Amino acid sequence: MTNALKKCEAQEPIDLGVLAQLVGYQLHRAEIDSYRQFTSLFGKNSTSPKQFSALVLVAANPEMSQVDLGKVLGMDRATTTAMIDTLENRGLLMRQRSTVDRRKHMLRLTKRGEESLQVMKRRVREHDERLTSRLTSQERMTLMSLLKKIRTSDEML
View (cartoon, rainbow, N blue to C red):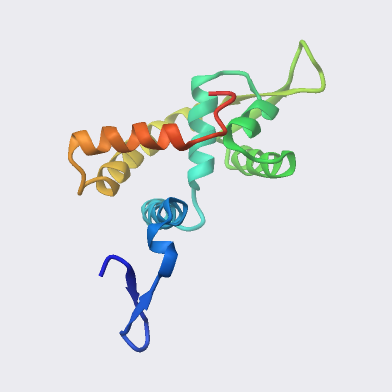
């Protein structure tokens, strides 16, 4: 039943039509599954995948600007600001005005953010292993390579 899904009520297969052959649809479904597993790991009102990514990026790039973080994560300014507000309110991140360009906010993890990130990284690695558990090591490496080839928004990476 690779081209069909079970209907919830009638238990009859749903024909996916052309969706079954579209890479974009399969990526979207995989992202949904990954997100569901991630939120079950951390809890619905806890750290989101984007928040985790933001913490990792700020840890790896101390004093990264708020604008650059938004660009790397593919978020607009308002969404980036709201996410940073949330992380700041949770005591994981702090922002400071740049001493070079006062219009910019530079980001850095708090001590609590650094400690929390270490725990999160372990849990996310476990999540990633579960997510790819049906793949061989070679298949996982191939998948990573192919996904990197597909991406078109890597100007900053």
